[in-house]
Image 1 (tube, rainbow, N blue to C red):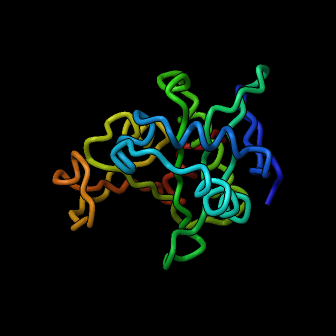
Image 2: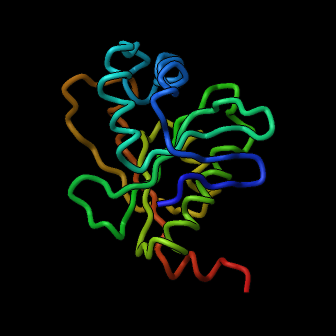
Image 3: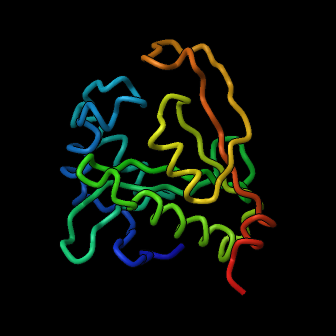
Amino acid sequence: MDIYLETDRLILRRFTESDADDLFHLHNDPDVMRYLNGGKPTPRKMIVEETLPRFIASGFWAAIEKPSEAFLGWFHLRAAKGKPADEPELGYRLHKSAWGKGYATEGSRALIDKAFGELDARRVFAQTMTVNLGSRRVMEKSGLRHVRTSFMDWPDPIDGTDQGEVEYELLRPDWEARRPT
């Protein structure tokens, strides 16, 4: 897979070991982590020894703003555990300073286009908590549509888990239909 991908305002590049501090700060912002772990801090040791090596080894992209070169967060496009390779999951996590500026939609659209245009995806999907309205808006603006809401028993539930988890998807024929000819 490519080392980087460019959009109008972003560079999406593979993670390196030098990204540990940026990742640590992102994963320790309680607002950023609110719908993921309830805003609990992530120990630096876990970032350095577990999270970052996993990001380097799999389909995670550091999101860098052009031209400031500021680290905004990350995106991923990868097959979910137990799912077919032609159905990659899209994900993203950005600093609060990047919220509401269209970066999540811009990066998501670029990776969706990569999935269908280069990686022969049949389907791209994304998931979030029902109450995470910001993330749901990004999914919708990126062309994904809501397909289901599910309810799970979580060992350590956070606020909003009682309203479920939503899944959005975009299928290849729908992506092809929206592309300019």
